[in-house]
Amino acid sequence: MYFLIDGYNLLFSWIEGKESIEKKREHLVNWIQREFKDMHLHGIIVFDGAHKSDEESGLSYPSPMELAFTPKGQSADENILDRVEMLSNRKNATVVTNDQGLKRQAGAFGAKTMSNDAFLKWLLKRASKKKAKRLPAKDSPQQIERLTKIFEEKLKKDDFEDWI
Image (tube, rainbow, N blue to C red; front, top):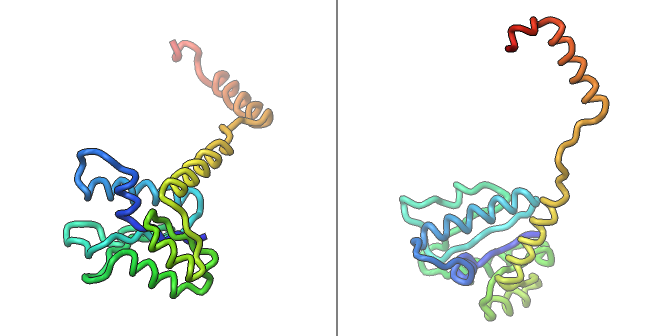
């Protein structure tokens, strides 16, 4: 599945607080990047407006999740629709936004759509399932026996008084 995320639409519906827009955007992008990497997902977050020279460019965020700032005069909605239109398999694409107009147009192109809340809940649920599947490492009886032998040999070689 490939996600096309309406960046500011998601950001403003999810993150509140007194931090700057840049910091909020950085937190959102870094979090989604980690989750996408852990879950082997792919996609792009599109933000309105060209990035400033002191900000991270899209090249700073490698696959599986890219970051794009739209060129001057183009909205994130237009950019996302252009990207959807260029996809060879639109049925595997999901546009994430609360913008009803963008949802209608993306759906007309054959892409799936998902609200911001539904996407975040889905992502959090999937992440918690993946983390729950990771069982803590447990030594096998053979490994314990091997380590015990090593320890016992070490004890025989060392003088017990050196330990005190």
